[in-house]
Picture 1 (cartoon, rainbow, N blue to C red):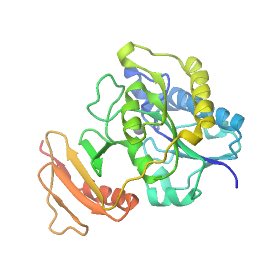
Picture 2 (spheres, rainbow, N blue to C red; picture 1 turned 180 degrees about the vertical axis):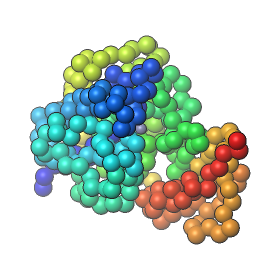
Picture 3 (cartoon, rainbow, N blue to C red; picture 1 turned 180 degrees about the horizontal axis):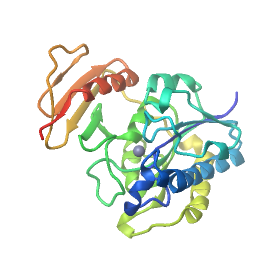
Picture 4 (cartoon, rainbow, N blue to C red; picture 1 turned 90 degrees about the vertical axis):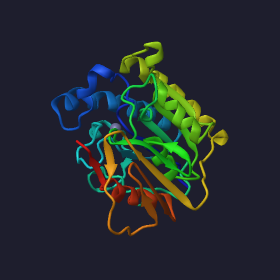
Amino acid sequence: MKKQLILISDMEGASGIFDADIKLLRNGTEEWRKYGREKMTSDILAVCEAANEFGIDEILYYDAHYAGNPEHNVIVEKLPSNVKLFDTPDRCFFWRRIRGQAQINPFGLITVGQHARNGEGNAYFAHTIQSPPLKAFWINDIHIAEIGMAILSFQGVKYLANIGCAASEKEAKELSEKVVHISVKDKSKKWEPSIKETYPIIKQGVLESLKRADKAEGVKINTPYRFKLELCESYYFEQPELISWKGKFSEQEAVWEAPSVEIGLEIFNYVRERIKDVR
Ligand SMILES: [Zn+2]
C-alpha cells in the first residue's frame, strides 16, 4: 500500500511572520500574495522535501487558514507533484468530507504553521478558531483550537509532528505527548528567524519524526463526544426557539453532544450562528 502523509496547515504559526506582519496573514491582500504566501510555502516545501526523502508516496494536504476563501495560502505551482489537495469547496472545514478523502490508515499526520490557543502567553497571534468572539473550545474536556480540530477528526492516525510558534507546542503535546514539536519562532526567547533559517530546521525535524513514526501515537477519545464552546466578554448566545441537536445554551456557553467528532464540528457551525455582540 502506498504511504500517504496527511498535512494540515494554518498560517499564524508560519515561519517569518511576527506581530508586526499581521497584514501578511490576510488572505487575498497584496501583502499576503507577495510575502505571506512565500513564507507559508517555504514551510510546506520543507515538510514535503523531508517526506519525499523519507519515501512518502503521496502527501494529502489541507490548507485551512481563512477557510471559506477560495485562494490557497501556498503557491500551489511550487508544490511537488505528489502533493494532492483535499477537495472541499473554498477550503471549508468539512471534516467529514476531508477525513473521507484520506486512506483509512494513512502513514501519519503533520500539522504546520500552527499558533497557540486564545489566552496562551508568549504566543504569536494566539486565538481559538476566531477570537473574539470565541474564548475557548473543548471536546470531551480536551481544550482545543485548530490543532485539536484536525487531530480529533483524524482519530487513530499517528500524530507525527507539529510545526509552528513555540507556544503551539502545548496544545499539540496535550493531544499526544509523543508528537515531535518543531518551533519556528519563540516570543519568550525573542527568537524570530527568517524562512532561510527555519527551512533546514523543519526539514530535519520532520525527517526525524518520520523515522521514529513507530513511536508516535494516534489520538483516541471515547463516545459520547461532548462539545463545549465559551465566548469572550461582550459576546453572548441568542437562545434559539428550537434546538435540532442534543445540547443547550447559557448566556456565554454552549454545550452539545454528537455521535462523531465530524458531526459535532458541523453542529459547531450552527452554534456559532447564535453568537451576538452586546455592543
Ligand atoms: Zn489561521
